Amino acid sequence: MDLFAKAEIRHTKGTSPVATTANQLLSEQDFEQAWAEITAWDGYAATPLVDLGALADSLTIAKVLYKHEGPRFGLGSFKALGAAYAALRVLQRQVSRRTGQQVSLSSIRSGEHAEICSEITLVSATDGNHGRSLAWGCQRFGVPCRIYIHAEVSEGRAQAMRDLGAKVIRIDGDYDDSVALARDEAEQQGWFVVSDTSWPGYTDPPRDVMAGYGVMTREICEALDQAPTHIFLQGGVGGLAASVAAALRQYWQQGAPRVVVVEPDLAACLYESARAGRATTVTISEETIMAGLSCGEPSEMAWEILEQEASDFITIPDSIVAPTVRLLARPQGTDPVVEAGESAVAGLAALIAARQDPELSDRLGLNAQSRVLLIGSEGVTDREIFAQIMAENDDV
Image (cartoon, rainbow, N blue to C red; front, side):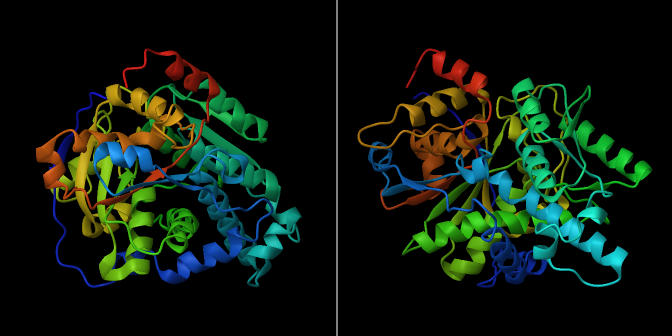
């Protein structure tokens, strides 16, 4: 596969065995509470951790592990762990405030406060997966839901949210424009935003979203007898990467893997933040095929964690995404077939690119002993787009 990537290498400062920032912003208690709640949901099951042995051999590394989030709650992505849980926490806070007593998550989930919940509207902006999770959660909890999408979100993904009972509002502009509109209209109408992006004065739902993602990371850690040497994590606003990095640090402490953040070169807000040494917004002039990563403004909370935990930031071009999707769907040797969405393969595409570039591989510390963990963040969430990718000329 002819791949290309560029890297901005930034080595972390010396950190304690459990990084202070990660623990302060996203504590072990946050993760534990999310684990206790989400694993009690109907339909919960750990998703597969796939060992791609033939691919690892072809890349001359010891191991490639791929956490396949396609089966998660039948929603197709890891986002099922985040928005639905954060929605439940918003409802818990609001019902507690209105009743004057602290209510439990289980009482919300069981419908004990259904009448109050039906009067609370939850809203968010999305590229697809986050909104689908929120719509699913709202349907389960009996809560009105409004989802804002931008012009380039596929109609298939929009319909999936409508099918779950959400009102979907499509706007002109990009993802960041939809975030701004959702926030403005929620403030005007007294609705509640459930976002994976934090901003000054808005931190609880993004923290809950990231805590929910910790279920996925705990599943990975409990399935391993040793830490990976590297993890390649998708960028986006940074919530996934920050959550996984924090949870890995807390679990493996000084033995935590090296964190490599991967983004589209068309939407590289974390890459530019690493260069600037502070959270930095970029203008998106062209949408990337990796729809879930098309974010120009980083989450400030996520950036605070990544600034301490991430070692390397890499951007990749769209041209390498479809070949990587096909590579998973038409695997080498005895590796299993994995049907993945466009955003799911960013880490794998960057890994392959790095192993084809000796200088980049060396700068990332990759060698024959490397054990690399990848987060397959989504399965096929739009069958039409997947079919188009699979129909293209296979250049693998």
